[in-house]
Image: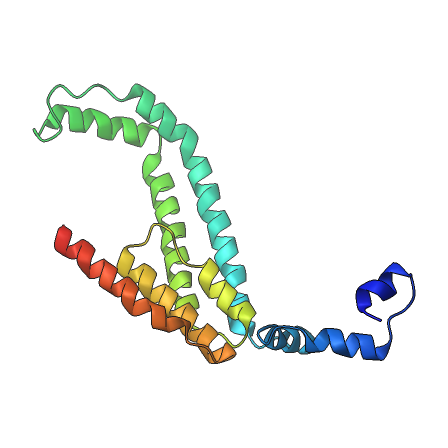
Length: 190
């Protein structure tokens, strides 16, 4: 009797049915089953860094929100530039500086940048930390910044895929040379 038939008849499946069902599981599901049953997670440092990462993202977004209103007021009051951007205009620059100070944008800008700098340091720590489980690999992948340049992006992908390869005994990193080759083509085209 298959597990589906046992379920349809609303009876409990036999041990034999359960063993037959588990034998049909894909081989890649076994490491995740083993990891799910582990008593203590091995990625304590990555989990700590992930919590720090999330707090820093929230701090950066809060700083951006605090800056949004004063920055909008500054943008609305900014005088039009009398000459094109590439032509120096001391009077315009001084007027803008006074307006910037009036809205206290220096302090807000510094707070926003400091939050982002902390965030970047945490991203670097996450990349350097060793992942022991698939949960750690997921943290490494989630911490990859979208606005990073191609080389940093590929290096971060290499770090995460190397950890996955070590845990799963696979060779996902083998696809990365092709990605580096694409990057070289983009540099030659530029």
